[in-house]
Amino acid sequence: QLQAYGGGLVQAGGSLRLSCAASGRTFSSNAAGWFRQAPGKQRELVASISSGGSTIYAESVKGRFTISRDNAKNTVDLQMNSLKPEDTAVYYCATRKYAYASRSQYDYWGQGTLVTVSS
Image (cartoon, rainbow, N blue to C red; front, top):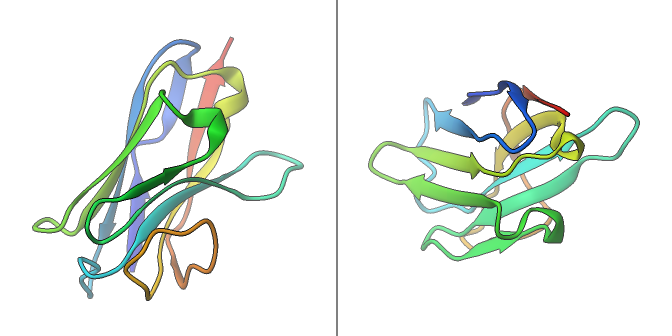
């Protein structure tokens, strides 16, 4: 089971840190990712990290967001800086059965956490 937390309301230009913790299983050998879905839009990949720490980012968040993982704690974090109103969405964490990072094909999903960025 994946549990995502850390969402909230922040002003534009501010920062938030999302965390995703796994219970019942370890995902140190699996890639993990953060996705988001804004109202009326399709879910999109925000960032993905391989088991070894290689990363993939959406162009819209490059330079502002950082994905990281702590395999000892079985967690994956998303540090979000310089937030914009267009970053407002429900954010989901997910893992996949493969070790390499990817923009798609995730197998396990957590519940979402809402991030709202006010202008």
